[in-house]
Image 1 (cartoon, rainbow, N blue to C red):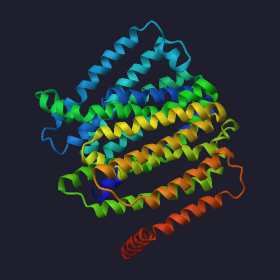
Image 2 (cartoon, rainbow, N blue to C red):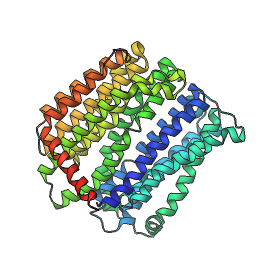
Image 3 (cartoon, rainbow, N blue to C red):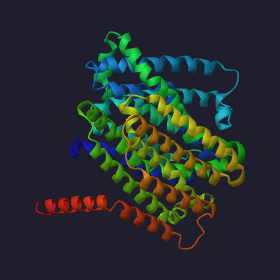
Image 4 (cartoon, rainbow, N blue to C red):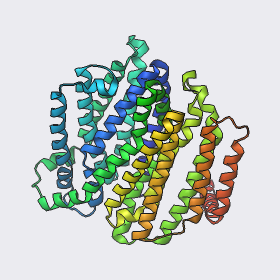
Amino acid sequence: MNIKKLMYFSIGPLGGAFLSLITVPFVAWFFSVEDVGRLTMLQVILSLSVALFSLAMHQAYVREYHEVTDKPLLFKICIIPGFIFLSLTCLVILLLPFSISKLLFGIESQYLTFLLVISIFCSLFINFFSHVVRMEERGLAFSLTQIIPKLLLILFIGTIPLMRLNAEFITLMHMSSLSILITFFVFCWVTRDTWIKSLNSSFDYSLLKKTILFSFPLVVGGISYWALTTIDRFFIRSISGFEELGVFSLAVTIAGSVAVISTIFTNIWHPILYRWVKDGVDLVKLQKIVDFMMLLIAFIWSFLGVFSFLLPYFFPTDYASIEYLLLPCATVPLFYMFSQVTGVGIGVTRKSTLSMSASIIALLVNCALNMLLVPLKGAAGAALATLLSFFTFFMIRTEASAFIWHGFPRHKLYLLLVLYILATIVFVLTKGTIQYFFVVWLSLISLTCFLYRVRVAELLSIFKSFIKRYSKT
């Protein structure tokens, strides 16, 4: 993948992260904390729907893309099972004697349920469309899938004072649903060559069986991973209510801007990895990526630890606790990104059941810790439960990959991560009140650079060469 394509793929996550940082203050200032909590429940259900009703067939699409000649046929085979499953489920939901909107949002409304169903259908197709343009290495089109919904939502929210709209949840629901619907139609057009050709493709049951066998374990793993990343919100809602859920959700949303790096890396990493698998994996090169990744994660972790005190200045006083909630929430995308490299053997060997096992075990750890910590510490307890459970997820994937494929030195890696986790636990439990605690973060990044000094020297050499090359032009 050349620099131009890399830049195109980066536009979406970077732009999406920037737009999220604009959207969050908008929502926090215009709407109540409770409505922010309800918006979180909407986002949680949409992410669950994609994880469940896609049947993980989008991952099978990515895995088999370079192996199958007829790409439209592969798209058709991967999307049909989930579409049928979702259609049947939505029919049942609309016929239920009780209100789904009351259960999720605390508001009795069949209209809200209808908007939710439309949003789920569109989100499912957008998910598959994004993987089509991703595997075609159409970086700019892929980036639009990240930017358009958030940009539209910001524009819609900006009309609230102009049109004198009521700042209530039904308004948020209208805006969110409309932004998703417009995005869906845009990507129907962008991917028209693939899905139109797929309509005339003859069905291949052997390919269907192959993709299902690969994706089925990932369905359980995907749902478990969804629960792993969202179960804390259900505990907070049931124990502490929508108000504290809104504060926690704001911290998670801001932490999502950190996920931009994880998103960029993952979108680039998988196509490159499976091309390596086809041509032969260079283990030395893979070890370098692991080392550089550790340096990157340490830098981000320390940076957030040092500067998190600035956050409360950008939000109403009701959100002051995000200063110490952000850091543990931000470790979720960091651990996930790292596991994509250290757990590479799982994808290479097609042992997808191990990914499922990692998600399930981490989920059980998360539930146990939430039951223990949320009643005692509220949102802070939920944040720590998520931190520790994702470290468990990371370790299982890493050790499983080393066992079934190729191992690599991991002692320095685990030492540093444990030190960072201990520092974060102290930071959260003391609510960031320890004076000069930033020295801890600076010490940890210094230790990381010392232990990986060879890689730091390589990075400095690359940077110097880059500067010399472009200073001459």
